[in-house]
Length: 222
Image (cartoon, rainbow, N blue to C red; front, side, top):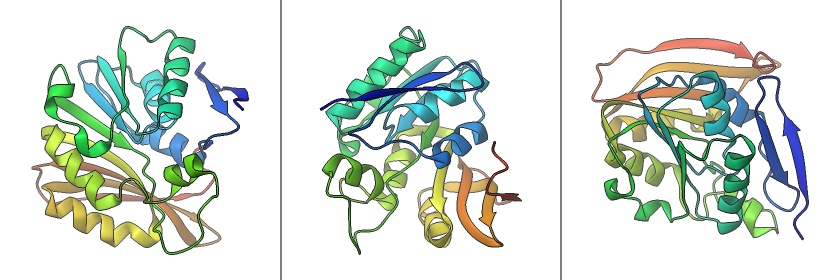
């Protein structure tokens, strides 16, 4: 049964969450605040869930067009509701497709920026019995390697790819990015009680080597 709750953010963004589906966490808000859009950019929010990353990031730095992609029909319906709720129908489009099926033909122009809060838990333990929630958290329908490969195939040269990963998958993620023509240019590492928790990565396709790193407390995004 669908049970919607309404989230109201300090910047005016409003978002429905469905209690029966996966609910976004602080990772999504951190990533949205980390992204930098220009008004001419065409943006793709991959593994978009409720659309929180793209919509929140847009409220900070408006862009020309945002595409949202998610494999789950229930999530895509929620994205539609959130686009309408924020009166952004003219600049937003939802693509309800398997990530592997996305091609450049799905977009009006080259993709300048891709953002992704991926399902980054490996299938080596228990998963949520709710398949919708499990797919948003675990590598069931896709994985980090496939996501990065697809991002490289869709984004233009010098385009930016924003990604959040857990700290224990940082080296693996940087390796995948490098293999697919990305160079990490900015990194924010969040920690709690001196232990790293998540990493935000800004990568640029076909860029030179060189990265800036910031260390931040887990609650710094608030």
